[in-house]
Image (tube, rainbow, N blue to C red; front, top):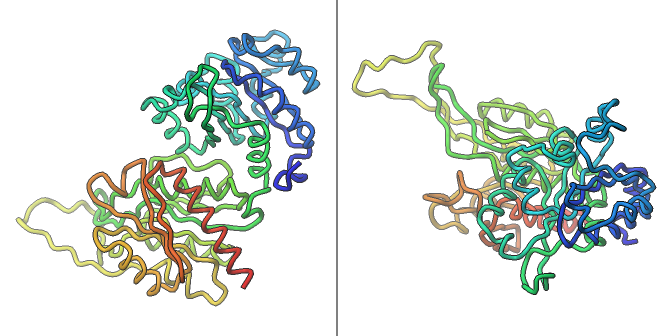
Length: 406
């Protein structure tokens, strides 16, 4: 057993979902490893998964009857599917087929396993397994990206030789790799026990009851960072402006609208934090006055007098006992020089800079970052924001460890 698992799985209740695919045979070994690590495992299969793995095998390993049917008279008297959804501390789908992923995205509940995914409040993790062409298809990539934005973990796939003879990404991660991911999820991560505050989304500065000054931030990057921090074991408070996103499971959410509200919320929670990631696109200015009645379209011109909003990141970085501070810089030119100047001016430990403009930065699913700190920098290439966030959080953990060691 590797160190990242440790005792984190002892007594944990894991619902292991198995969908139809040749990789289903690996689920038996995964169940064995989870139980050996101290977890309780309940296997649930889709009806077609029985073509690839026998119920008897899983029952012998887990010591529990395998659940398959949505309408099971032996269990439904006690609302068995709801009972299972409440029982689980993690639902792990391994393997997760392209068909299962597509149905989960649109919220279908035609199998017991899909129903459990909709009914649970527990984290959900998918270990995709499919032909490399199916994984590369735009529909599959869109489906997995949408699920990631809802806080569902996508673990894998790996790359290599496939049963069909193809070679490429689409293999389910090996059982030992998935065991490590589960161990990390339950507090064995590099940021285990550390408290983090993340800001995300835009702010809206009211002009009148129907108009506001705002920006194009979707919040996707901030929410992805919060999810990645949770996966590394951090306790996360997410201070979010108005977005159309579901908060990551496990994060404490504080909803705000204006820059001043975000400032007040951050100053309340930051003193208890060891990490502050300022991902929100906070409005630099707000209207000096906001009218209580809608402004009528009467004059040919309208002048708004704007005043500066508080600088949340700079003020957090100036606290006597401040957390490790990470900022973001959205630039249209001279990316690195402007970002480094911002890092120094605000007195922060690290800054992640990205270009914005048509098709870049805001309101898109992919992004690239130039990350800078004192004496170093790295380029994170264009990729889906959830995966980009994982790489950024890994860098943050490295820099925090290096700072502690000095």
